[in-house]
Image 1 (cartoon, rainbow, N blue to C red):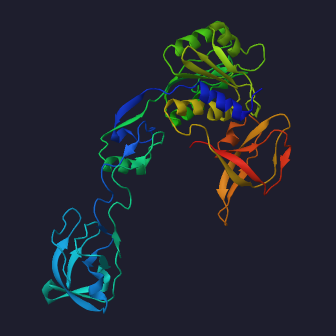
Image 2 (image 1 turned 180 degrees about the vertical axis):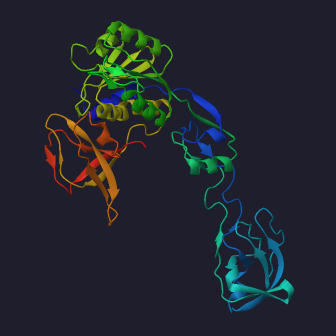
Image 3 (image 1 turned 180 degrees about the horizontal axis):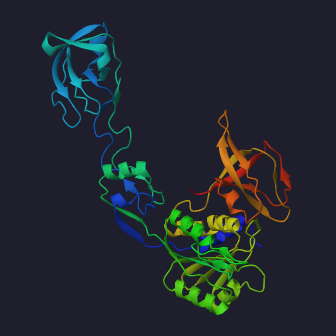
Length: 402
């Protein structure tokens, strides 16, 4: 039985990166960069004013207050092209280029114009470089501004636009099929009969797969029928990059997922993971399609999908860091583990008055308690062999995708 880290390593090793796609910049947010973004110009491309005020030579204000002759004006997008001489100043607006000869800016609140705007009186001296952003201090032409494998956020859109990336090369969205198994399931809109439940796993898997950047197809239920399950798996494997099944992976009489995979000739990489909840997790490949057989309990589905299937979907898109990233937090109250397996328990993160990240374990009723799990923002990791951790302990956590 593999550890969680070993299982994640196997998933990453067996996942192939999909070919890149070229998309319009407006559609690039949330996608994974498939190329380095190179600065085609210095940023800023000129010395830029940080304040509305007056640009001048600091040497002219050594004995401030002083009066300088106003010889022009510079605004954003419309600079002043002359060379500033001793005793001169120009009006300047935030974002405007600082003219040659000027080495500082004084804010407008410390100035006043006289003689019909031809003279400005400045109350305080300046220092060279004051209120000026120098050319290329943000990035130099030819430097790498964003790297391959980075997920594009809203702030990065500005960088892409500034460097002329009207179209962006990104990772292709994987095609994922979601399949819930079990004769006890009924559609969401139906009223469950005796011994039946509504299908909930399909919708959590749908949401998690979309959050991971995939195109998702919901398949019809597969009852406890191996031939029907084999057919659905084979059909989806013919058109999808990945398949996520929920249920049917334990050792019961009606658990047919593994039998169906073996019958189809799928390559099985692992069938169990040293994990609580989520021990009976299957990872396989049929032709080029990765298949994740996840436990049927809703919390187990969420935990195992985000640890394993999400990692594969992000790796397919070229994410430089596809797996959930472990962080440290302070344990808010005692949490119980188990000797046999590592525990990944639902927790809620908060920050205390000292700025410490606190992980509060949720009170939950086990792997079927999906209502309690709705409050989870992270998974608290308790290593195998640890029966309990006291409040105040430094622990590892992984954040759940929003």
